[in-house]
Length: 174
Image (cartoon, rainbow, N blue to C red):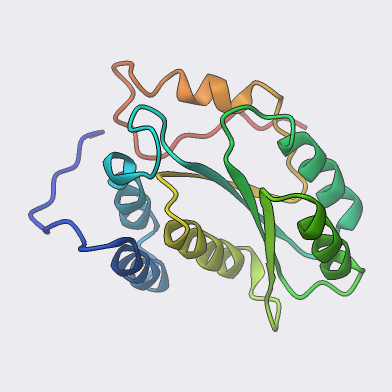
């Protein structure tokens, strides 16, 4: 079903939430970790009616695709920031991200010591987003290119009968 209940008390703070999420992801409990992330909406910083939304992008040696995606994400309304997890790229990605981070307040990056694959990158990125107070986390690979209205269209379902879904995603087309 779409509705899940839990007898577990809410975490005391976001750091504890991130630690719990991290442990769930380590055990491969992705759906449970996503539910935990979704539970933070009421505790999001800022306007209670507007959840804090961060995008997590995982990249590895595809700088031109990443550049295209970062430019597109800058056009998307309601997105509060972009966290890029660089999976130890060797193509200049880290240097480009460092320069972009200096110029754009809403873009930050972390470069991993070794390539941990997509799953490892999303593991680190989701935990990072929760540490940063995200109520909703939009996960994507560097080769994605969402339409400018994609997030708004996803959020339009937040208060519909299907709005209790804990994982939403756009249709992916070639």
